[in-house]
Image (cartoon, rainbow over all chains, first blue to last red; front, side, top):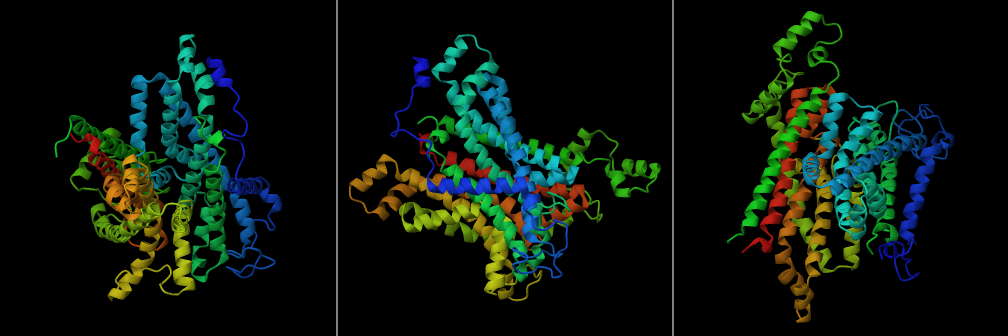
Length: 285
Length: 319
């Protein structure tokens, strides 16, 4: 009975499918575009990032400098392309640490229950009581900003949320018959967690990973904008806005395009997540 | 209104959690700033200081005492309004903060006064005409504001109102504005930006709360009995959605705490957040700790109020 329930094929066409609608496809295309850019940035950037290529500062968009030039006369397009490595790379690393930690702890808490669950939940709830940008500020003030510090800080800020989400899902799965049966068979906690619970919460957890990725990109950009994130001479998109903020009153493209780059990334991830095939988004249907 | 026992237990539980959180937060703020590589005395005196000078200063500042003791005396100082001395300017932190705090509170108050009515009207309207062009326009706008960083909202506001329309000054903030008009102009930009960020959240949550109530059987009953759409929403659904809406308002206002840090920095507004960001770059620890505590306490206050209103307004907890 149980094996039938777990492997029963869905009738084609009527149930949830793997198909994406067009909004989701546009989102996916944009995500793949930025992933491509982040990987191949140094090869496709038209100028070396540090090179002062233009005599004019805050130059307009032109055939020579597609997105204008920045406050030192460097090519903005090249700096955005290379900056994608920092924004996307740091955020990805942080979101994986946060979600891996949160999901494992959440599953363990759900399966073990009892005092471990209560204490961990209360402690992590308390950390949710610290505003995220503020936590980043305090840590950076204390230990200084470097890429490993940024990754760990961002991960620490978003771990409690990932934990809470995974725990809630795992508690539901944990109450199902097949888990009870597995437990009655005498399976140990690691088996229960990785073979019974994890495959059944994977879909929603992946969607949650995407949402948290967006939060992390926004927070990282905010920190860099305050001058506390990625440090010069390197620059992520938030730092590019900061560098060129003086050009704002001139309406310089150097300050607008890094903003647009952030927006295209975050909005397309949101579009993709919101339009994921039902089959991935929630397994209960 | 008589309340059930569960109600009081829930309230007590929530307040207890807030108190525990406050202790953990102050612990985190104090010890995060204690993680500083090297020693405060060393940092203050610089590389060229002699061993004796550093040791002397360390003793004078009480740094040779155990950390937990310093934590307790710091906490006691906070409770009695003694925030310590700024390392950089050697002025009491309380003095530095007091003016700045009233500036920040004024900014928050003006933003709240403008964005709450606006957001409620838009949120309830969008729920009332769910699926209409108006609803979709509001949804797309709020999602866009939520998915971009706060500084981008600020940047766009400056571009539109200062650069293209030329209505307002760009990034300058006149500290002492002479006339009412000048004051209005100085406040406009920060308030517009913060208002957008806070309202976007509030509109979404209000809309969701009202729609959830509209989908209940008794509201459907009102519709079946022939009530108009307006009457159905305003007369039947809204009174029961008030709790979730109040919860949404308090929760969205907690976004002020993060937003204000960015907005004060970008517009050079002399508030607590600007003070703190400057203190971070000069590593003025007592100042950072005090500002961080101010923000944490106000954030905690808002989310606790949000939770309490949710409990208070739950009719199932009345007897």
